[in-house]
Image (cartoon, rainbow, N blue to C red; front, side):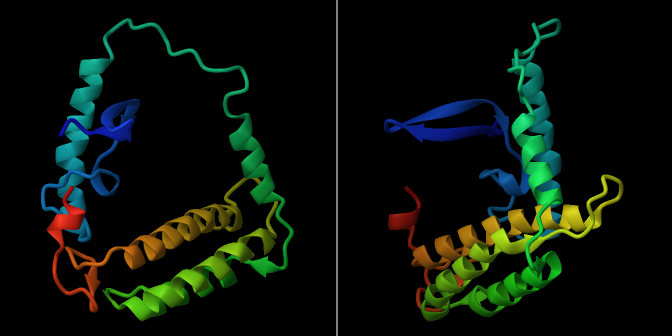
Amino acid sequence: WKAQVIKHKGGKDEIVKGLLAAGEAGCASVHGANRLGANSLLDLVVFGRQAADTTAELVKPNSPPVEIPKNAGAETIARFDKFRNASGPIPTATLRKELQLTMQKYAPVYRNSKDLETGKVEVAKVLKKFKDVGVTDRTLVWNTDLIETMELENLLTQAAQQMFSAEARKESRGAHAQENFPDRDDVNWMK
């Protein structure tokens, strides 16, 4: 409830130092599900404020600055340049459209086991094609082609995670409606 991120390590919960989460990224919710925009906004206001309060509690005035490595950010710049100079034959928009159609077909709002199983195979195929994406605009100013390519990488990661986790979840709960498993399964999913 303090917006802290917790990881499970050695059978115990451990706070990830310096990392907070609110809204869609947080596991706590005012409503129990964050699918609707209004719900997300309220979650951001409530838990965003809590994240700020937790930060104020943890970071004291005149605290020494956090030491960062000399090469901090180098990996990010290299990744950025890799995208900017990508010269594959597939335009970002083409691959994004293929991902969109795959997700709409195999992981819609009302899902079934057969489609989700097929969807795992299909989304993996789309994911593999990203290595062949191409960016035509090499500039550093207002480069929407580059931004859309970086966003696509995120979308691909999220889509694969959604497809695989939805197929593995053998129940219906909140925004996840699985036709082959119409009921909640608190025994196996509320641990």
